[in-house]
Image 1 (cartoon, helix red, strand yellow):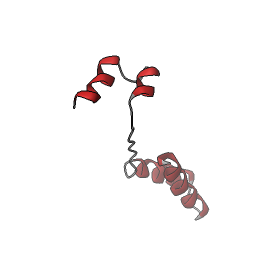
Image 2 (cartoon, rainbow, N blue to C red; image 1 turned 60 degrees about the horizontal axis):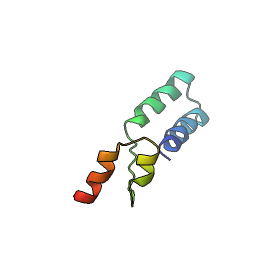
Image 3 (cartoon, rainbow, N blue to C red; image 1 turned 120 degrees about the horizontal axis):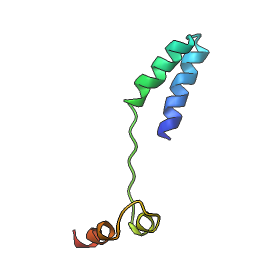
Length: 63
């Protein structure tokens, strides 16, 4: 969704008649205004996919 917000901002600038350089500037400035966060019930699939190590997935149970 974060990328979608950037694309929407750039599309609006383009529709309003902005030049390509102006559209790129809008996209670049919007990048710093969006943020993505995620919450997981379990770290199992992150560990299975190799995103985190086994030790990290086990430390979730300790805290």
